[in-house]
Length: 125
Image 1: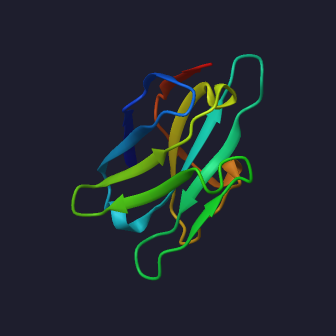
Image 2: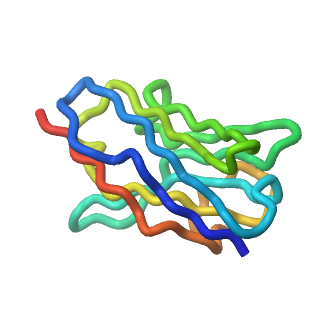
């Protein structure tokens, strides 16, 4: 099993940037693909970005964040990052990282069995 802890959330003005971190512990981190998901108040949780296991790295992004967000991983630090640029008020949500014991960069949250507690991101206009 793997345990996940998110950090890096906060409040920022529209157009600003934040970098979220997802620190993993427990099982061998390189066995897992990782995704970021978010949930805004009153809305369903949605996918944001994902990254495959190490090897040939693949990434995948929701259309709403393409060109603005970048997901990356540092296996030496057991950490996955989500760099968020050009933030918009509609990016306001609780952001969760999740891990799946499979190779691919899936955006389907049902495939993820391990979840962190989330970190709040608030973007003001």
